[in-house]
Amino acid sequence: MGRTGAVLQMVASLLWMPQAWWIAQSVERMTQGGGFDAVLPLAACVLAAGVLRAVLDGMGAWQSQRIARQHLSGVRAQLSRSLARVSPMDRAQAPSGQAASAMAEQAEAVVPWRSRYQTAMFKARSVPFVIAVAVGWFSWLAALILLFAAPLIPLFMAIVGWRAKSASEEQMLEVGGMNGFLLDRLRGLSTLRALDAVDATALRLRERAESLRARTMRVLRIAFLSSAVLEFFSALGVAMVAVYVGFHLLGTLAFGAWGEKLSLAQALFVLMLAPAFFDPLRELSAVWHDKAAGEAALSTMADMQRDAMQIVGAGAQDSIARVPAPMGAVAVEIDALQVGVPGHPAAMSAWSERIAAGEHVALWAPSGAGKSVLLAQLAGLIVPERGSIRIDGETMNEESAQRLRARIAWMGQHSHVFAGSVLRNVGLGRSDVSAQDVRHAVDVAALSQALEHRAGLSLGEGGSGLSGGEAVRLALARLAVNRHAGLLLVDEPTAHLDPQTADQVIESLVQIAQGRTLIVATHDARLAQRMDRVIRLTTGSQEVAA
Ligand SMILES: Nc1ncnc2c1ncn2[C@@H]1O[C@H](COP(=O)(O)OP(=O)(O)OP(=O)(O)O)[C@@H](O)[C@H]1O
Image 1 (cartoon, protein in one colour):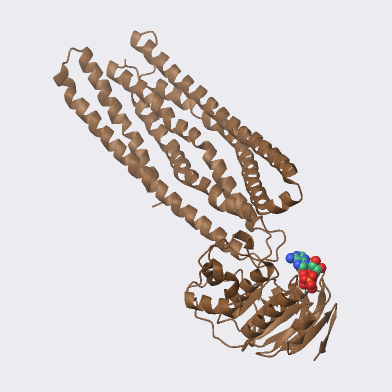
Image 2 (cartoon, protein in one colour; image 1 turned 60 degrees about the vertical axis):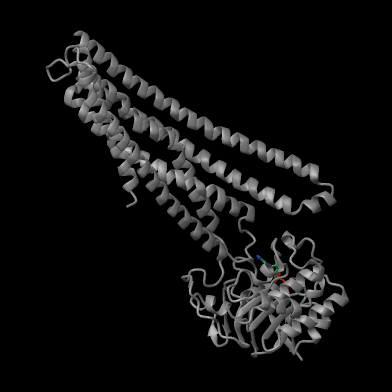
C-alpha cells in the first residue's frame, strides 16, 4: 500500500522504453523513404503511451503524497501527545516557539522525504537496471559504459549526503531556536521597551539571523555540490554512449553489439535510453536533500521528547472515550512523601498527612519550602521519588493518574490567558461545559462586573488588558466550571493583590470550594483564617495547628 505510488511512477518511467523504440522505428522508416502513413501508427502509439505515462505518474505522485501526509499527521499527533505529557514544572522543556516551529514548520519536511525521496529512491533502484538490460540486449558495450558510470554517482552522493545531514540538523536547530527567541521576545516586548532594551534585542536578533543565514547557505552549497557531481557523471556517461554509437554506425568501432552491426533504429534506441538511464538518479539527486531535512526534522522532534520531566501516567494509553468522573469531595492521604523535583534536592523528606473529604486546608510555609512542588505532586504533575498519594482511597500511579486527574483542578501561580473570548478561556474547549456554565462560573468568580463593558471582546494573549486580580478571577472561574473536580489545589491565589481584591478572591474561592476538598498554598493570614485547618510546613517535618 505504501509503495503503490512509487510503483505507479516507476511503471510510468519505464513506458519511455516502448516510446523510444517507436520513435527510433519511425526515424528509420523515414530514412528508408517511408511517408507520413508509415509513421502515423507509431506516432499514435507514442502519443497513447505518453498519455498513459502522464496519468500513471500523476496517480503515483498523488498516492505518495497522501501516504506522506498521513505519516506527517501521525508524527504531529504523537508529538503533541508527548508534549502534553511533559510536566508544566519542567524547567528544561523546549521553549513554546521552538515546539511550535518543530510541529508546524519543520515537520513539513517529512512530506517531501516520504513522498518524493522514497519514490525517487525506489525508481533509482529499479529503472536503471531495466534500461541497462534493454540497452545490453542490443549492445553490451553501451550497457557496460552505463553500468560503469552509474555507481560513481551514489558513491559521491553518499559522501556529500553525509555532510548534508549534519548541516540540515544544525539548520533545523537554528530555525527552531530563532522562532523560540522571536516568540519569547515578542511576548516580552513591553518589558523590553520599558527597560530600553529594544536596541540590544534587535542586535541579538540580527546576530541570530546572520547565523541562520550562514547555516542555510551551507546547506544550499552542499545541495548544489551534489547536483554538480551527478550532472558531471551522467553527462560523461551519455557522452561516452553517444561517441560509441556514432563511431559504431560509421564502422570505426564495429564491436560491442554481440558480433553484429546495430541498425539505425537500434542505435537510436540505445542513444535515447542513455539519458533515461540517468534520469532516476538525477531525480534522486534533486530530492537528496529531502531525506536529510526529513530525518533532521524527526530527530529534532525526538530530542524534544527525550529527557523531559513527565507527569504521572504519561506512559499510560490515552483513553479518548473517557467515562465521566464522579462528582463530590475527595479525601487525600499522603504517606512518607518526598516533596521535591526528581534530580533536585528534596524540600521535605518524608511527609505524611490526611485531609478529609470536603476539608479546606491552608499550606503555610516560608518561601521555597516546597508548597508549589507539593501541590504539583498531588495533581500528579511531578512523579514522587518516594512515598505515596491516595486520592479518594486510590493510589496515584501510572495506571490511575489520568482518571484521578479528572477529579482534580490545579491552579498554578501563573495561569495562562489565551487570546480569545472569556467563553473559550474559561470553557477551554471542554465539551461538557456550556455557555451557561461559563456565565455561572464567571459570576461565582466575581468577574462579571469587570467584564461587563467588554462582553464578547477577545482577551489579549497572556492576559494583557486584564488586571492581576481579574486574571486570578478568570483562573477561579476555570475551577468553578469544572464540576467533576472534587479536589481543588490552589497555589497562592492572593499573592501580589491589594487587600480589597484579595478579600474578593478569598470570598470567591471559599464559595467555589463548597462541597469540595480545598488545599491552598498561601502566605496570606486572612486566607489561612478562612480555612478549616492550617498545615505549617517546615523542612523535614510538619506541625498542625487548628
Ligand atoms: N520546576 C522545578 N524544577 C526544579 N526545582 C524546582 C522546581 N520548582 C521548584 N523547585 C525547587 O523546589 C523548592 C521548592 O520550591 P516551591 O516553588 O515549591 O516553593 P514554595 O514553597 O511554593 O515557594 P513560594 O512560596 O515562593 O512559591 C525550591 O528550592 C525550588 O527552587
